[in-house]
Length: 211
Image (cartoon, rainbow, N blue to C red; front, side, top):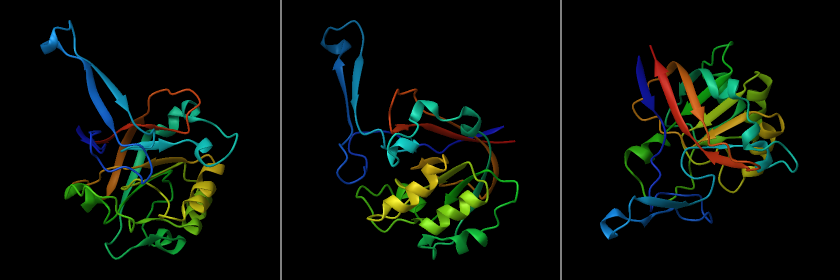
């Protein structure tokens, strides 16, 4: 069995959403300074790197991250590779993407993945994302999880409509996956966040398994 880690490594200085706190990962206890053990502290947004959105992120009073259904976070997934010419994942694009009828989890591999490959250190506003009508198409297909290879499923400066369509329908949203070197096809997904009580999101370790 092949295990593909599609998670971004959380490090100081990594790209974050504009306005979110920068990652601060530091050792506060050091063996070389006489401590018995190394102990580190982490300060960052819960929407840093590879992460999951809970409905509460965009829907007041909705479910929070610790309530996400585990049976959605683990199971078959289809990786769909879209052409570099695709700038927005609309309902039409989704209809022509070759998503199998039985698919309930989908990850979109787009030109965004090149940002991770090239280790681009600046936030890119023109990333490929899902439009509101694309989100509705996914809901109508019975999708339970959707993922994208940049830090948001929704377009920059127009994030509310897409997020609300998905999250009001309690679809699990996985953002910031690194799909470099991952061919289109069918895999098994394992994506588990820390059990943060009452949070609107959480970083996650996402893996694809291939027989």
